[in-house]
Length: 227
Image 1 (cartoon, rainbow, N blue to C red):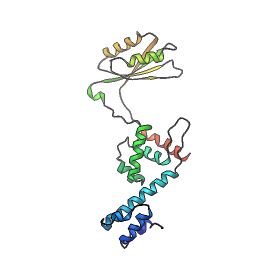
Image 2: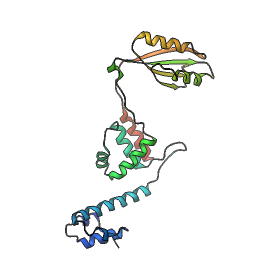
Image 3: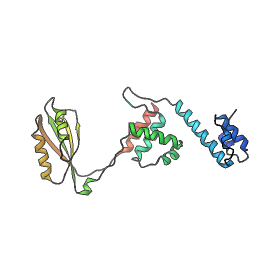
Image 4: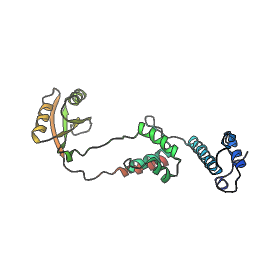
């Protein structure tokens, strides 16, 4: 049986019998909805048809991925762009309306993206609580970089992160930390210098965030979808 189009389905002259037949054509037992009002029946038919069309569209999409990257479709990239450009502030309902994608699809894919490629975090403005933030740049001896980094990370001091780096500047580790005053920072630096395998330590204090440009990811998302 040929299903009615979206336009004809909105026609108020469509009978209950025709709506039940359309449900049957989707593989749904329309007889189960005989007691439902005709307005609710029209809504059910529309919802079921949107779900079927969404499933067909997803099946036709061909995810692209490199050998070590997540498999993302063009729809995934559109959702990802919306989330990143808004710093995650958009609701799934708003994204559904903006992108004209069924809400159920947005909710399902958003959950998967947050579990794979999205980093979802809450940041605290520590400066408002009286803390200062600094980066320590650490030069290590060959073969000791990872062990030094793990040792520092195990300390009880207010170490936020330790990152291994590479380049031509002789810096092997970045250490991000919080401190209240210069004495606390100096004590931490002296302790780092005393570790076996550390050659030298430099530091830099964060004093102002000039801005963040998450929208720059938009070009990456667009090129991914077009490639």
